[in-house]
Length: 464
Image (cartoon, rainbow, N blue to C red; front, side):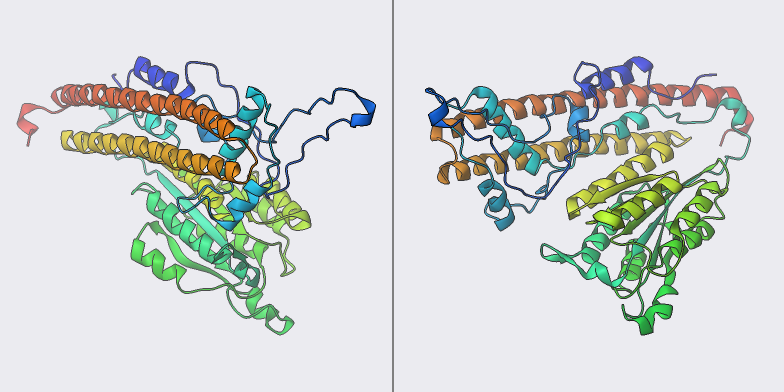
């Protein structure tokens, strides 16, 4: 019986453009420390011990610049990866000040190292094209022998657990961690497929951090937005009902989340929990035991724990909780990095929830959505390219003004950036055109097979 999916050859071509016609090289190494620190250069040899001093190579600690679209997606999001970033920002200037002067006789390799470092500061968050490729390969209708049967219920459910303890008042830049988290949650929820459900639980949002309020605060664990399809006004109202306040009943939040998702048991449901916290358990609970219970439950959730600006013992505890739940842990330090983590969840949602309508009108509607998504993806990538290129250009000008590099080095390094982005832009354009071609062929194939199934399974007397 025919299936409604894009021919393997089309998807294969899409994948070739994605990986840049070469084997996957693997993810680039994560940047170990996102804080701006002084970049060290080995000292020159003592002139008294050698007659001809030799300058040490200029080497900045940054991952190798990506050479394929796949590597662009996996490359770490930069510390200053924001649409609002300006080179004149104080934090950006501090990062540029930390770069040591480059020798006037610096090699081409050293200038490439400088470009890679500056790129790593501004690298934006890129949407993964594999989401669209997946949507072009998922069946559009059931097999003919399934037409008369009820469709199997399948849901994609996301529960976000947000730490609303008093420490979330901490400022990162001009915003509190709570404000950053709320904005990221709004954007994430709005990006989910229409068929997905989302819920929001908060804890520690009552009382204060005083011992007198500990009992009340530790009992504050509330599903402020029940698991349901996304509703903008409803979620906005829920997010506006609490502010960072008291203690941290982390363990109890995991116990409650298990109950929240209890109606979605079995293989037909995909359940994901995102816990965002800037601290450890302070209400005498056992979060590791709660995490193990969650993992062993029938809801079988994927648990992702996001540490917000954590370090030391606090980070170690959340890592242990994630391991006990069979999930993942990641530490984020700014708004863009938090957004990047939620974007991955949105991509996963699309992978599991995309399907086509049974009727021709549904197929056309879905095809239009695919086309819009492809152009949206392409435009998003090109906007990121323009932003990065702009920031790199003005950063190099600033380094020249600070006498870190010569004018010739500024121009040479920027030319390297132009060559990199010209190649990058060309790959994006090829990807867009290939995906559009695949979409068009998939549309034609789907409509033809829908017609065949209709003629085979519906008698003339039953046609409406």
